[in-house]
Amino acid sequence: MVELRKRPAAPPPPPPKAKKQATGKAKSAKKEEVAAKETKPPASNPTDDPKGGIPDGAGGLSGVAGINTAAEASEVAAKVEADAVKRHSKRAAKGGKTELPKTGDSVPLEGFGGEIETNDGEKVTLAKLVADSKAGVVLFTYPKASTPGCTTQACLFRDAYTPLTGTGLSIYGLSTDSPKANTTFKTKQELPYPLLCDPSASLIGAIGFKKAPKGTTRGVFVVNKNGKVLASEAGGPKDTVEVVKKVVADMGGDASATGLDKAEERAASS
Image (cartoon, rainbow, N blue to C red; front, side, top):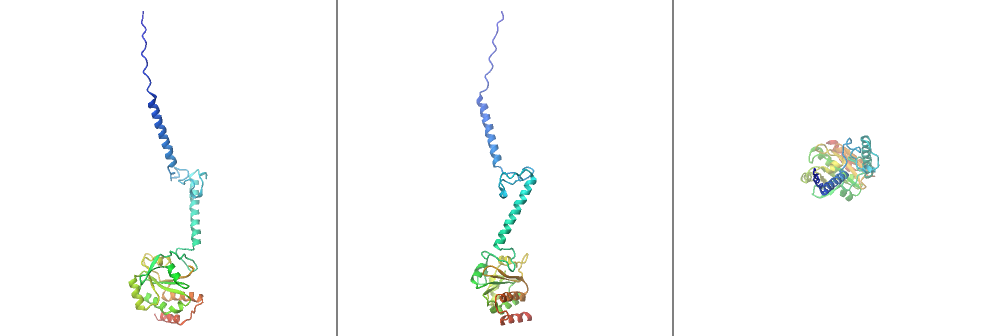
């Protein structure tokens, strides 16, 4: 009689704990991947990102604006840029500030041109000079103190000082010279008005008379109490005086005053 032997029992299956643990790690990794995708900014390459890297809400667009292709993304980007330019233009027009102010423009006096210094060492701004004046400020610019052309110009304004200031305008010479150089210039030529020192050409540049890459263009800038530019012109020594003479006449001043005649005689003989 053949004896039937029982087969040995199969080994027990591995405990499910390890499998569940692996599943838990996978789920955790999946969650981290999803979170990373949600927080990661969109790609900037339109070929990788159909929205062209433009996040939802950019340029006033909502997340359901329907940007589906790179072409649409480019159109949206162009519109956003155009709108920005329009907003900037509107702000500039509202403030009246231009890069190079011209006659008839208005400038925001506060902060315009930065801080400068008188030949006596007093820190001033254009806003303060205008506030201290009766009707506005005349700034005549010159390249370098005590040079022939600049001496002629300064003396023309000196000789015409009384009639040119008769309507309440205050006159100042403006250059990049140091206080010492301008004080020597003022003393020697007996100038009745202060000279302004602008070594960084911040104010000279703001009114449009900075010469690139270095230097100052001879000219004259007149602004009234409200920030309106009454004159802004480049020219020779006599021309700058003539510009102010016309402004004074337009303001009701005496354009035929003796001081102006004397200034014209000096200009003719120089």
